[in-house]
Image: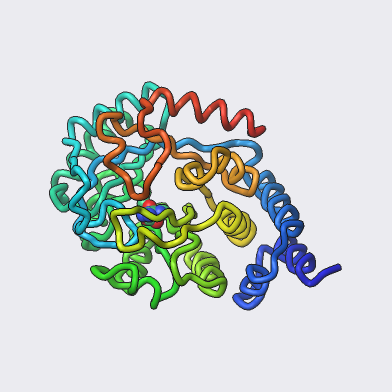
Length: 336
Ligand code: 5AD
């Protein structure tokens, strides 16, 4: 048996690999090995979660951002984006519609937009919880003060998504001129400490990212043990400094999804919109490689296209109900 098949067998049996072993695996994996890996990841997912796929309704409520991440289409320096901000009333309207469509988790995501003060967010969360006591509220609003995280949690927010983006300090600081690697990690630790269910994650195929960097991403996640892990390919956006770089591939991203499933087997792993953008069956392939969550967009159609973190994002002309039923059909057709 090849070295690589031994490693795959080991990861399947023990849910563990060293940094060196992961790096070796990423550098040497063949197409045949990939199929074995996806299959092990699928079996592991099924052992933990069966055939269930969890749906979370995604509300992209503002594309205004104070940060300037080199890869991101809504970075502060991109003067070509038409900016928008949904009012709290409009956000609640999205929740009403999402609730009708059957969603019981809402992900409130935005750029880092301080117009939504702690007070505004607290009132919003309380109102959603008052209307729908059984829903889970997930925030994805970036870096804030620990005290703010605390009061948002106290007002009813249950979960928080904040990708670590890359576990390489050097790469992180190159890509995020307005942010600090240590701050990001401190936010993630604080969120966990406060009691949020936390989602971390990273992009695959960033310019300059190496197999060793990706191994580091997985080792970091094994340490942090987040409840959710979001992994997507980097997709260049022409109005950013990385607009002419190469993007991540579907294959490399699926390998990372499968490895995350095997190394952090109890985690929730979304089949990301970025994967669906790269390949017509990208999300289905992710479900077959260990992912078990989908986050259909319930942002109003009128502003959807303006939330372009990357180009050609899918579902831009769709309405929330289109995405709801499209995803159900896709999940069932994929056998889940
Ligand atoms: N390509 C792929 N993913 C991106 N994100 C931001 N910009 C891009 C891009 N150009 C991801 C980041 C962020 C998440 C909301 O979207 O990982 O955390």
